[in-house]
Structures are given as C-alpha cells and as structure tokens.
Image 1 (cartoon, helix red, strand yellow):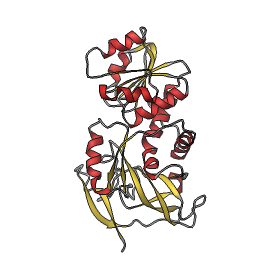
Image 2 (cartoon, one colour):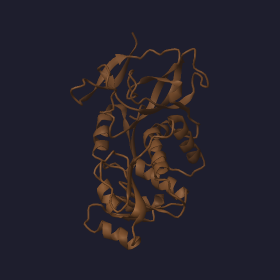
Image 3 (tube, rainbow, N blue to C red):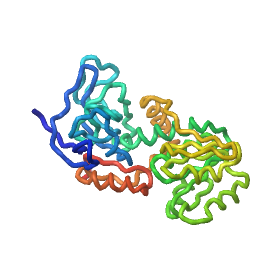
Image 4 (cartoon, rainbow, N blue to C red):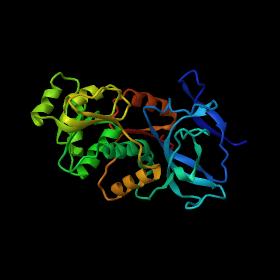
Length: 309
C-alpha cells in the first residue's frame, strides 16, 4: 500500500495535530487525486472536522497542486492540470498532506500566471471576503470599517471594496497601518489604544455606513462606530443585539468555491488584486504556521509549500 505524510487530528476528544504516515487516499469514479504543491493555513484548520469523521483525520481545507489520477466520470480536467482545490469537511480528509482526493466540483483550473503558493492562499479567505461584501451590499461612495483589516480576509476585502468605489477604514496594529493604506484603505486606526473610536468619528462624524467584524469579539465595538440605521456583518458568528436601528447580520454563504475562486483569479490576472502572504513555511514547519495563524496576528495569509527547504 502506497503511503504519504500528512498532518492529522488524532482523535475527536483532543485538538492535537501531529505528522503521521497514512495510506494515499483512493479515489471514486467522480474524484481526482491531487499531488499537493502548497496548502493554505487557516485559523480553524485544526477544528474543521466532520462530525462523523474517522481518526486519524487529515486536516486542512485549501491547497493547490497537480492532478495525477482521475476517475472515469471526471470531465473538464486532465492529468497534469494545475488546480486549486477545497477539501473542507470531506470524510476522506483534508489537504495538509502530500496527496488529496477531491471531487471535480471542488476544483478550479489554475492559470500558469498564478503560482501554487498564491493558489493555495485564495479559497477560504478569498471566498469569505467576496461573500462578506455581498452581504454588506454597499454602493460606491459608501464607507466601511473593517475590524481586523490586516489579516488574510481583511487585506482582500480592502482591495475588493476599493475596486467597487467603497471607502475603507481598517483597524490593525500601528506597524501594519502603512500596509493597509497601500492596499487602498483611506485611514487606519490602532485597536489597542482607547481613542480609536474617536478617531473614526473624527473621520466620519455620523459614523460609517457599515462595518465588517472578522474576528470573534469585534462586533460590539464595530456597532459603536456605525451610523444609525447602518449595518454590521459578522464573519465569526458573534451574537450581539441590534442598537440604534443598526442591522446585525451573519455573513451569508452565497457562492460555490468555483464561482468565488474564478472571480478572484480574474482580478489577480488583471492586477486588480494582490494576495498578501506574510510567510511561506516548509512542510516540516506546518505546525509552526498553524500556531502563528491561531494567534490572530498574521499579516495576510500563511502558506506551506512542499518545495520550501
């Protein structure tokens, strides 16, 4: 039996992740086997496990690689194709491994102008950013506050919003402010100082039209700087009560992974979107990357590359 190296959750009762040697997954007639070249690192990767999963369970939900085996019912792809893939909540496991089996519905063709590292960084943060903006439903000229703007989702949101004529103010540590302004934010505030809400009110006295609360615990503060009758969209699922006729809404999943990634690829090809990747780790350093992401202080995305020394 052919083996591969993979990062796995060892049981349902613990969140421990370790590197193990497992059998390479077998594919059905509707699946392909992808040789993973790079995978994205997400804050929830160790927790995203199907309720009926068997252990050890390979973690991870986004990657890029090359198709090396195909089922007879697969169409639209060929052996050797470069692809971006999503493997979230698959019973067969995720993509923190040398190989992953996925259905063709979870594949997106990747142009040669995009690297495997870039491709691996797109699916989760990119899809979330697109769906957040759709849920916000803002118009050109509207103002948007992004709480946690320097992370993987926030750095994409800033650019997509600017491309749509939306004026953005973002919160981040002061060292990341120049970076937010470079991406297209009009103003940046430091969430660690007491006066940050006052700074926003100086910029927009009546409050901003809407806010995007990416991290857990940021929705209430976001509501404080939204104007009466505005909207707060939460990504994390924060439960907060509406105030001053402010609408609080959970981000809505509206796009398939193929729709979302293809839209983002087009923006990248046209140089309208730059993926912020703070660091690229080797396969052996993957747990370091996971722990760094879980701090919530990464700038942009972290990616693991199989080619990194």
